[in-house]
Length: 212
Length: 295
Image (cartoon, rainbow over all chains, first blue to last red; front, top):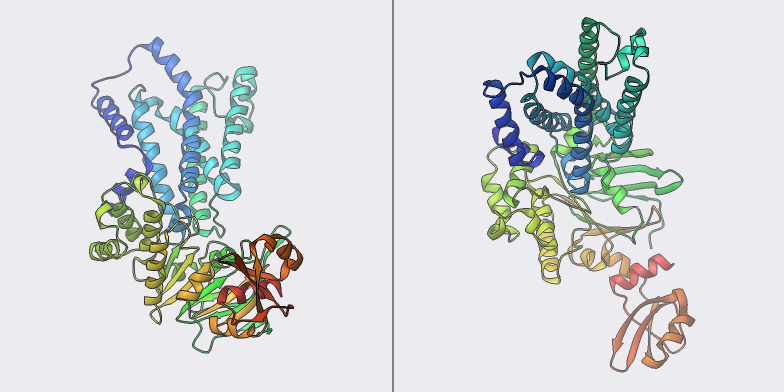
């Protein structure tokens, strides 16, 4: 198990990137560094709220696409090992690395800002990729992100309206109360986890696997 | 020549297909293929686009058939994929390994995925068998095409699989490696089910007990290499043509030409069917295969 995990780490991400992410995470979690300046802080979080959710779908696309371009997918699929576990392990490795890298500049109460929408888009990308192909999976999640961004920039007041507000990812400029925003972010997190579980189910049942 | 539509082996069949059909949109890659393969080295021969890779991918549980059925040791390839994968060694046509891993690490990883406990001895033996011991600690990105192919064969054999599917395994191998690989396949005779898909007649001639010729998704022949040669005995003729006249002669003979071979200032041209001035010859397996495709 340990050997497989170490090999999975080596396959998934460069040691250097993993090292930097863990190092930054340690610095932040031990409070050797901490974001305290409120002005810098608000701009940074606003930027992350827009940019961070893009990382999970882009990283997932890269992970799945690489498997095809390396021509390793067919050999992987014809082994009896559960494909869902392999995808889950690799997804968690990159997500953990990205999260550790980013928390260096984020206060714990804002973790949800990043992870909720990030996981939702990642889950959407994974489901779309396994059902329709990587390009469509990525397009679906980027479309969702782009629509949310356009609405947040052009008509943020619309985000206050009822059920629809649950499907928009960029909420910091919305007229919603902080508690309502937090509730929606938890909703995104739940949606992301549900999509991830659904995707893992698809990976186990998927019958057609193609290399490039 | 056998013209029946169902092809059964005399021994117990380990791989069976019944009316196996696969469509890709409007393209029919396999058309109602009935085939039985026993514990033998079985060749699947055919030109590019004949449906060989589709057949292998269905048996390897990578593709579901559009209709019909395929079983491996009585397990259905659509509904019982895990038991099949437990007994499968597969070398895809386009094999690749993770570029950051060394050859040894790649085999260790595949051993983990195949659930092999303490694989070190097996890995050492396979690395040695395929001449990869010296490069085992090098990253696979530094491997030549031949080395990578040998690594692919080694991973397919990890876990001593009951069924070995190899798709165009000798592509990219130099002549020496090709001979070594065929000898290795011959050594597996009677041990396990080996299905070798290839468009190279020499691979089948050297290594296979029996073969099926696939053409445009259908089986055109099923039997031993000897049977295939026998089917065209007395139907293949040879004529010597001066080199200066070869172009016109070949154009005139068209589809009847099977093979040509240089012989001093002449060219020996083998054709299907009687021809004035030509004498009958015993066909090679290549002649018989080409004659079958043209007939």
